[in-house]
Amino acid sequence: MKHLLGCEGLAREEAIALLDSAREFARISDRKVPKLPTLRAVTVVNLFFEDSTRTRLSFEAAAKNLSADVMTFQGQGSSLSKGESLKDTAQTLEAMGADVMVVRHQSAGAAARLATAGWLRASIVNAGDGTHEHPTQALLDAYTLRERLYGDQAVGKDLHGTSVLIVGDIAHSRVARSNVHLLTTLGATVTLVAPNTLMPPSVDQWPVQHSTHLDEVLETGPDAVMMLRVQQERMQGSFFPSPREYTKHFALTADRFHALGTNTLVMHPGPMNRGVEISSVAADSPQNTILEQVTNGVWVRMAVLYAVSRGRDEK
View: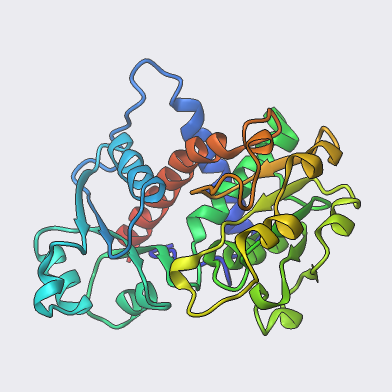
C-alpha cells in the first residue's frame, strides 16, 4: 500500500491488517519508552489546507511515535495567498525531503490527484478531501468498535453482525461516506438517519438502510450510534427550519439516550456541538467512546504511516 486515499475499494483483508497493526502499536505504547525507530530517517509532512485539531495533531503524534521527522504546513499564512498551486506547494515540500504527505483539502479528489498525477514520488494519505472521504477516521471508528465488542479477542475479527446508526448531516460528511464503505466491507449493517435535506441524493445506491425517523430506528437496539455535527461551513442556504427544530427530531437528547440499551455505544468523530446533535448526558456517559476514538486514532495513524512507508519502499 503506497497510498491511502479512501475506504472505497479497501479490501476486507487490508482493513483488518491495518486494525491489527494498530492494536500492536497500542500494546507497545504501554512500555516505558513507547517510541519506535520504525520510521527513522522518514519525513512526514502534514499538508493541511483546512482547519483541524484532532486529525492534524494525531498524525503528528503518530509520526513522532515512529521516530519520523515531522513538518506541518497550514494553508493560512502560506504562499497560497500569493497564488501558488497545490502542485507547486506539494513539489516544494517534496524538494525539502517529504517522503509521506498527509493531505487535508477542501476539494474532493485533491489527495488522489497528488497521488496519481505523476508529480510526486511521496506516499499520500488522505486526511479528508471536501465531502468525499476521511479514511483514517473510519478506520479509527472501526478499531474502537472492534475493541469495545471483542476486547482481547479482537485480532483478526471483522464487524459481521454489528449494527451501526449514523445520524446527522450525511450529505456533507466525508466521515459518513468513509464509514459506510469500511463498515459494510467489514460486515456491519449501517443505517443512515437524517432529514431528507441532509441525505445524499444518491443514497438509494449505497449499501445501507436509511430513514428520517430517529426514534423508530433507535428502537431496533443498535450496537452503536454515531452522531455527526451539522456542517454549517459547507452549507449554502437553509437545510432545516432552525437548530432547535433539528435538535428536537435528530439529536441524541438525554431522553433518547436514557431509552437506549446500556450496551449501545455512543460515538462522535468530533468536534461536538453539545446541545445541538448530542446532549451532555450522552456525551459524558460511560457508553460514550469519543475520547477513546481520539486515543485510538494515534495507533491507527501509526499503522497507516507504517503501511504506506513500507509500500513506498517496495516500489
